Length: 248
Image (cartoon, rainbow, N blue to C red; front, side, top):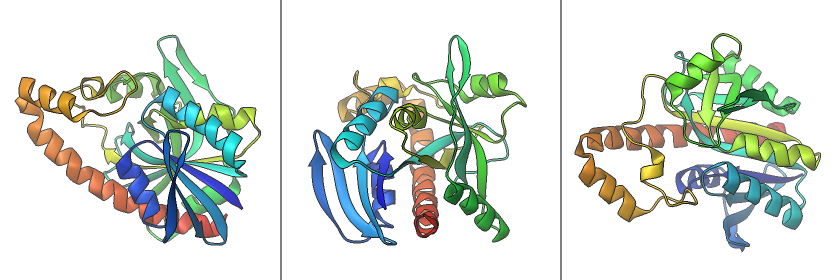
């Protein structure tokens, strides 16, 4: 099967690449990409950049250039459900877009392999959950998301790319599996906005990171903690993809 895995950030890209073995690096337009063979599949791994717009553009480019039979949105997420811990893995059963005007549910059907992964891993004692992906076009606090989603959506997580990929996948009638590992739990609200670290295209710029740290030195302990959490999330994502690909 021809599969495209879309990640947003370099750390997510590297976590996915770690389970794919040897491959060849390439560029897909402006996108960093890597082509590999794994579990009998031809896999194209792509780094889209963060945010709704970057993810949508990357999905459109991938479909136009590579004609995949399956898309996988993979990366990190923020836990909105209080029971989720750092390193837990969540597969999307439902997907919503949260905006100022309310909540829009997307007509997403997760392929059986994604749901089978949850069943198998849960039976084996792993912390893998089926949940709700709450996508936002702008950075939104987890406290606000929790209040909006309340008890209507099981095991919600926050992220910014999967809903955009789902819309493009649906338009092109390509199935999508969204899988994320938790890098920050529900009680961890950022002491800064990612907008402060990024340019207008949501690309992290070291100069902006340094400037923000100089203005807000109190965030240094949180940044150190989040870096450690990201390493835990990366290992969980690698392991989850290793388990998922043979099921496809």
